[in-house]
Amino acid sequence: MVGVRVSNKEEFPVMEKGGYSDSQLVSHFKGLLVAVTTGDRENYDELVGYLHPKKNLSPDEVAVLVTTLKALSGAVSFIDSFHHESLLFAVSRMSLWNYGTEVMDALLELIVSLAASNGKYIDWCLEMLVKHFVPPFYIFDSLKQENGIDRKDKVLSRVHAALKDIADLVPLAPLRLSPIVVQNMPSVFSNEPETVMYVENMLKLESGAVGETVGSTMLPALVDRLLELDVEIGWDGILQEDTRGIFDMELEDICKFTDEDENFDSMSEMLNRKNLQGNLVVQKLDSLIVLAFLHLESCQSSGRLAEVFDILLPSFQRTVLNAYNSKFTQFVMFYACALDPEGCGVKYAMVLADVFSYDVNPPITRMSAVAYLASYLSRAKFLSAAMVTTIIQSLVDWCYAYCKLRDFDMNPRAHQVFYSGCQAIMYILCFRLRSLMDIPRLKLQLLNMPMEAIWKHKLSPLKVCLPTVVVEFLRQAKAAQLFMASDSFVFNDVLESDLSKAYGGMDRLDMFFPFDPCLLKKSESYIRPHFVRWSKVRTTYDDDIDEVSDNDSEVSDDDFVGRNTEEIIDDDDMVVTVEDLDFNPDLNKMSITPKNSLKYGMRMPARIRPSTSPESL
Image (cartoon, rainbow, N blue to C red; front, side, top):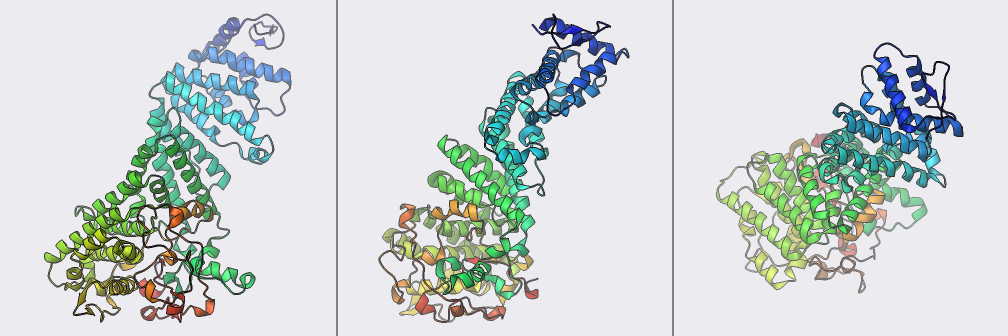
C-alpha cells in the first residue's frame, strides 16, 4: 500500500500518507498519461517535476520519487515518445550515481520495463544504462574515498544486472547493445580515469552473461582504441632529433652509469623513455593495455583464452598488422601467446607465416607480417626451438623457391617481399642460432637448409637487407662454421651497401621490429618474464670472447627450448660507461658498438627505428 492524499481536484495523488494502493496509483498514472494526448497537462507537468534531479533529497522526497518511478513502471505501455517527450527527458537526466539504492532500483525497474514494453525504446534504454559506465565528472573524486569502491560496485553491478534482464526479456537487445557501447566510448582525448572505467565495463560485458553476443565487438573495439592512442603518440614522441635516433639499444641491459644520480636521465634518453615520461596519452595507453592483460589472465583462468584469442587475431590482422605506427598495441597479442604458448603462441606464428607466404596479400601486408614474425620468434621466450626451426624452414623454402624463379634484378623495390623474408631469417638466427646449433637434430636441419644458395643469389640479399642484421648474422654464422669452403668463410668480403637505404622507402619496414622492448612502464612489467633481451642471448661467438661472467651471467645452451622462463634470463648486467658508446653521425658509418666491443661483448641493436634524418625522408 502506497500512502497518498488527493489534491483539491482529486485528479493527481501527491505522495504523502493516505489510501491509494499500488494498482490504484498505476491506474491513476495511466489516466494522466492519456490525458496529455488530449491537451490536459496540468497534473502531468507536476508528475514530471518530481523526476527532475534535485540535490540533497529529504527522506520524504526520496519516498515520493521512488513511488513515482514504481508507478510509472506499471504504466510504461501508455508512455508515448511524442506526447511524453518531457517525461522521457526528465528520466534521461537522472543518474544512478546521485541516489541511494532505493531510488537506483526503482529507476532501473522503470528502464527495464520500458525496454520490454515496446521495441522502439530498446536503444534509448540501453544508452541510458551504458551512460552509467562512467560517473558524472563531479563524482570521480569521491570514488577515491574510503567508500568509493562500494559506491562504484553498487551502481555498476545494478547496471550490468539490468542489461542482463533486458537481454533476457528482449533476445535481440545484445545485438543493439554492441554498437551503442562502441559509439559511446570516450574519445582518445578523454581523461584516463574516464577511459579506464569505461573499458573496465566493456570487458565486464565481454566476460558476462551477454558476452557470447557482444564479445566479438568489445575486444576489437578495444584494440582499435589502443591503436588510436598508439599512433597518436607518433614517432616524434620516441625518436631523438638527430641521426642517433636510428639505433636505440637496450641500454638498460648493458649499461650501468658511474654516477647514477647525475646520469640517470641520460640513460633514459637513450632508451627513449624520458620522452615518454609525463605524456598523458602514453600513461592512458599503458593503463588500458594493463587492463587488457588482466582480462586475458581472467580468460585463461576461466578456460576462455583460446576463444578470446580467436576474436583478437582477426582484429590484429585487420588493423594493427598494417599500422606501421603501432609501437605498443601488439603486446596484447604477445601476452596472450605467453599465457598459452602451445595454443595461442603457435597459432599466432603460423598465421603470420601464412600471411607472408600467401601471394594474394598486398606486399605491404606480407612485409609487415614477416617483420612481426621475425620479431616474435626472436623475443618470445616461451616458444620451443623445434617450432622456431619449423618456421625458419618454411621461410627458407619460400625464399629459395623465389630465387629459382628470378634472374638478376637489382631494383630492391621489385623484390621487397623477398628481402623481407631474407632479413627475417637472419634476424631470427641472430637470436636463436646458438640454441638451435646446440640441439643435434635441429642443427642437422639447419645445415640442410639451402640458405647459402639464397645469400649467393644474384638478387644479393646480403647487400640489400639492413647491414646491422647482416653483419651480426654473418658473424654468428662464421663462428658456427656455416657456409664454409676449404676452411674459409664464404661471405668474408660482404660489406655494407648503400642499397639498403632504398629498401623499404619512407616506411622503412626493413627497420621495423614490432616486439622490441616495450617502453610502457606498467605494461613492461607483465611482458618482462616472457621476453628475451638481446644482452642475455648467448651467441655462437660467445665462447671466443673474454667476457666477465659467472655461472649465472649467461643464458645456457638449452635456452628457447621450452624451459621455465626463469632459467632463460639472468639478472646480471655488464657495465659500460657512456663514454664507451661510439656514435658516428654519418648514417653510412653508424657504429653502435662500444670502442672495445670484445671487452664488453656488446652486439647488434635490439631497437631499430626510422631515422629522422632528411636522407630517410
